[in-house]
Length: 483
Image (cartoon, rainbow, N blue to C red; front, side, top):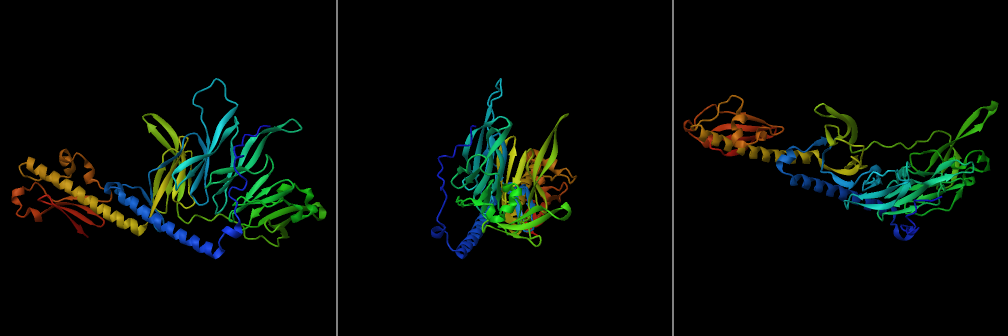
C-alpha cells in the first residue's frame, strides 16, 4: 500500500513542544494578561472600524449596507481573496484568526482518460497577515476526498484532521479505505501525521479544554495543544477485564460533560430475565478513572453566539430575459436588517467572533471582513456624513437653479413636481434629489430673481434629514439648520 499523506517527515516531532515549568506563567498572570490583550484588541478593532468608515466618502457611507445587533452596527467590508478553485471545504479556527481551506486542484485541460490520482492541497489563511500558505500538497485516488473531518482545539491554534491515506485489501480480498490522523499547528504551518495508517480508530476533541483523545484498539493517548502525547493508556486501567465483551476503541465513545474534561458513557449488560440493562459511567481520561454515574450530569451544549449575527444561505433565482438560473445567496442577518454578502455561494460560515464571513463562490474561497461600531458611534458618524452629504448635494442643486434662472429670463422653475427633470440638463445626475433617508422640498413657483429683495435671506428649497436640513437660499449659498 502506498501512503500519499507523507509530506510531513521533515517536521520534527517536538516542533512546538515546550517545558511547561519553564515557559508557562502562573495561572493568575495568564488570566490577567489574556484579559488585557482582549481589551486592547477590542479597542484596536473599534479604532480600525471607525477609521475605515471615516476613510469612505460621504456618499459611500450613506450607501453602506448595515445590520444592527443589540449594541452594534455591522458593515460588510470589501472581500479578500483566499484561494483559487476548486475549494471543497474549510473551517475557522476557534479564535477566528485562521481558516483551513481544502482545495482540489482542477485539471487545466480535458484529457481523454480520467487520471488515476487527483492533486489536492491544504491552505491556511492567516487573517492578520492577509495571506494563505500551502501546508500540504499531494495526490489522492480519483473519487476519494482528501479530508474527512476537521476539528480545531478549543482555545488553541491547532487543528486535527482525518485524512484519506489510500486503499487496502483485507484477508478476504475486500478493498477498504485507509485513514490517518494529523495535527496542524497553525502559527508554524506544520502538519504532522499522528502514527501510521489505521493506528487510531477515532479522535475525540474536548469542546472546552485544549486536548484530544486518540482512541486505538488497546488503549488511548492524550494529545495536548503543544503537541505532547501521554504514553499509551490501556483501557483495562479504566474499566477492567470485564469489559472485553465490547469493542475496546468504543469504550470512550460518549458525550462530553459541561466542563469538557470528562465523558458520560454507557454500557449495556445482561440483566434479570435476559433483559439488557444500561449502566452509565463518568470517565476522566486525564485522571484515568471511570466511576458509576448516579444520574445524568450537566452535558456540554454549544452556546449561542454572543455577537447576535448569523449567516443565512437562501435559494434565489436569477433571470435574463426568458433564461433563469437557481443560485444560493449568503446573507448576514442581525436583530435588525440583513445584508447580502454574496449572490452565489456554495458554502458560507461566520467566524467564531462574528467579525468575518468565510465563503466559497464559483469554486474560489473568499473572506468578507465585518466592521463593527457601537450604535452610538455609528449614529454619530452617520449623522456627520449625512449632514456633509446633504450640504454638498444642496449646493449642487442651488447652482443648477441659478443656471436655470439665467437661461429663463431670471425666473425660477414652476413648482409642478418635476423639478429634478427640469434641472437634469444642469446636474447631469438625479441622485442629488434622492439621498437615502432624506426628502427635498422646493418653495418657489416661477418667481423672478428681480422680485426678491433680499436673495441671501430668501429660502428657495431644502433637503430635510432626520437631524436637520440643508437650506438653499436665492443667491445660491447653502446653510445647515439643526432641528
